[in-house]
Image (cartoon, rainbow, N blue to C red; front, side):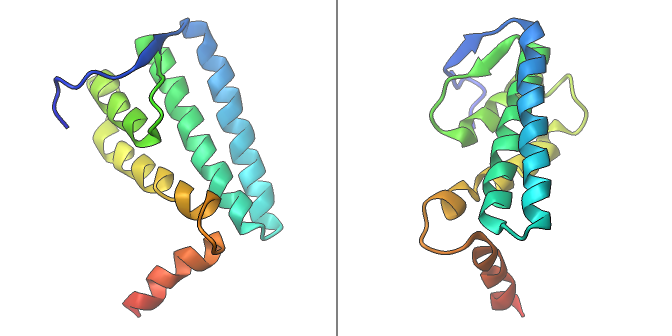
Length: 126
């Protein structure tokens, strides 16, 4: 992605970082509870939402902005370009975030279970 890319953002008070961090924590806790109950679709979708909220928290804390883009993948690019020099290994961590966010369509919109969608890829390799 070009460094000249302009992202749709909203200025946000740094103190709002706590709100996004709280959301991320709640989504993570719900994901963990869903995993224990073997509710795999809830695991997947809460993982995606936890990742997005955590990225929002980081952007607010380090740059005073949050994304207003509709494409959640773009928020990861915004993270890399905005705080790449402030957080160690942000590029590598951003790739992990992209892999998580990429599962959103599988979990939310496709006509198959999240767990089956994950394991179908493993079965193709085996």
